[in-house]
Image 1 (cartoon, rainbow, N blue to C red):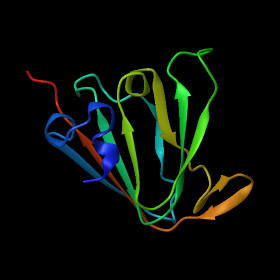
Image 2: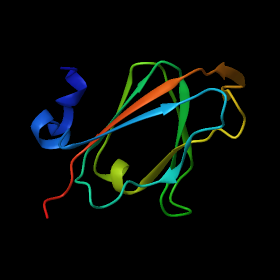
Image 3: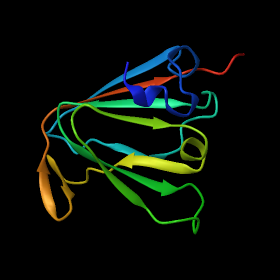
Image 4: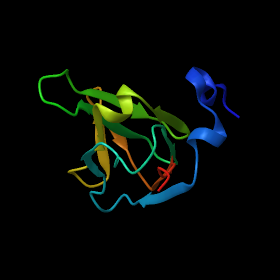
Length: 125
């Protein structure tokens, strides 16, 4: 188990619960995800594993004027853990308006197929 999962009180049984979303993104279509904060029906704590191709994930404040956008390069195998303020006060997105690539630090990053695994836990009913 990666040490980062244990950082700041993270534990497998508490956060990486009962819902897994497996998404495939293909190079030949401008697929991404719109800016959003995950639904409140999920508990605090979301883990995303990014596989195969790199991509740029943008974090932006959920409320306008609360900060500046932050771009993060997700290399294959990257793990993002969002909880607390990162979970509720920041939107995240992957913007792919053009087919097959994004730009990171002025350079195009070649994107082929990308797989995203998102782990969340539904709130108790």
